[in-house]
Length: 203
Image (cartoon, rainbow, N blue to C red; front, side, top):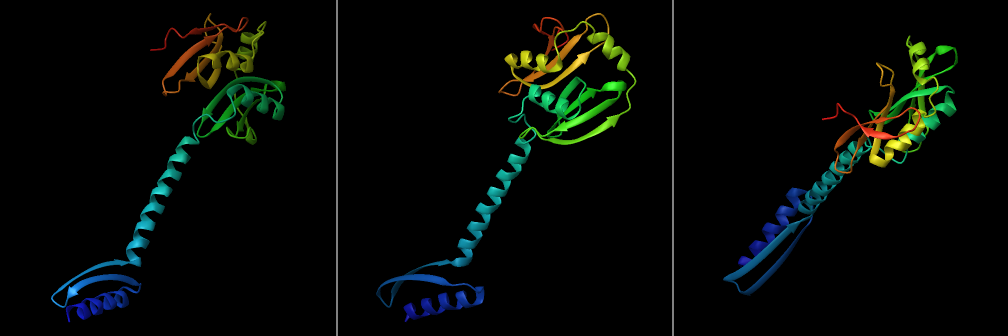
């Protein structure tokens, strides 16, 4: 008798929930019965939970996309100069793309954005800068370009920025690197020898 009640209850639960149910009943007699019930809705809920976890992994992937990808700082500079000929003065990995500042002919400034995973040009815009004379004076007689400086600094870690320091008497390239553990370091790269030395102001 109790067995029939168990089966009826399981059937009713399946109809009310809108799904199906599986019942296993083991009974020695009418006075001793045991049932185990598992609904498809439970399985669907577990599937949705796993799907949510996968979505979370995708979010982590989006965060990782802001990290340096296959395109190095030197390669980003090369791609930018191919698009906008001139003198690259800085390159920085910012907001998920490389931003390369180029001093073109006629002392016009351009910022070229490069995709860090493919090296494709994402866009370029003309900037209003008025320090072209200072930059050209700082680079006069220099044999090390921004690309060369990025390559030299890459021996210290992953280069996330390289920039010309044209202030004061110690003119040269400044580079920032990130180690595999995420630690940031600043370096100075000589304009003529490409020698890399720690930045004195780097804590």
